[in-house]
Length: 75
Image (cartoon, rainbow, N blue to C red; front, side):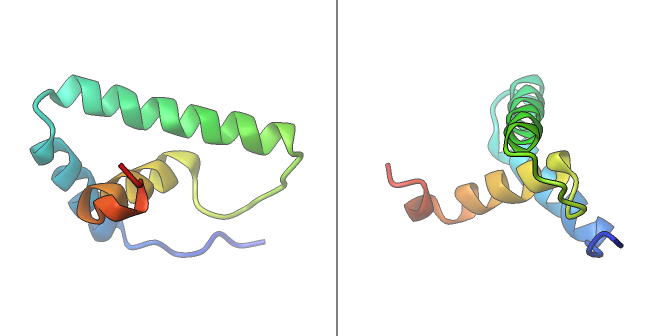
């Protein structure tokens, strides 16, 4: 199966938005990595053979969506 195409420019733009919104570049990088690691672990436990978006890219998309739409995280 072929992975869905994701615009590299879109991922880079979203990553830059996360970094700009964060007070600490290292901390946001670690948060993205941790979210991607959790996603990969969860997918492995659920035995999901997903050939979709890579976990790091998905984490960037999710976190930038949360940044732009805070109502989706329900604070």
